[in-house]
Length: 218
Image (cartoon, rainbow, N blue to C red; front, top):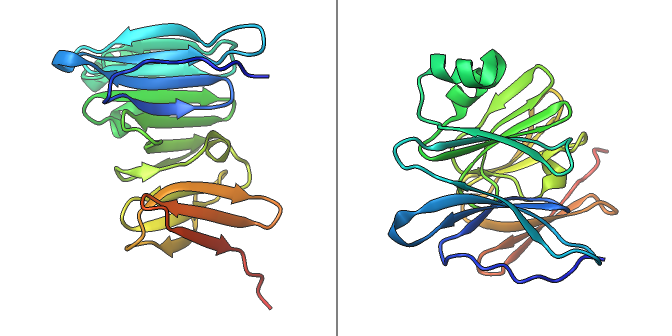
């Protein structure tokens, strides 16, 4: 049983990543002071805990590597705005190459989960910059969203929304694009997967709904 706890953030805070046990929030306070807050959800015996608060320095940016196979997650961080050679010195050749190609302006999270690696930026609601499975790597356009953590680590399908454009379904191992569904006039705000009926239940910000169903070839 999960406990119910009240968490207080600024009006400009946004959830960067959440799963069943952990929560990462990009919090923007007065005078543009920012930080990454890392929580562990409570259960029937313990309250939700703030495990780490990593301050953001505007002139440096922030790069965090989250190793999800540890309990609690293990986090390492460094400035983001460094030359590639400096990134290699801090993170090693493999991680530095991915960070250098995926980085944006402010914050990157590199999540390592077994054979899966994902890089997210600070935008809320799950903006994916890169996905890696073993030696296969795919970099994504800005404003490419995933909608739940299970889909991000799934071995069945990787379903991503390219904002104002399309819903794209990838093979999660090869990361090859399999299906593109145009969504130019329907801004996806939330998406739920109905496993029993192989359906996607999609909701817009205005609470319009769309049902995507798999149709077998005859």
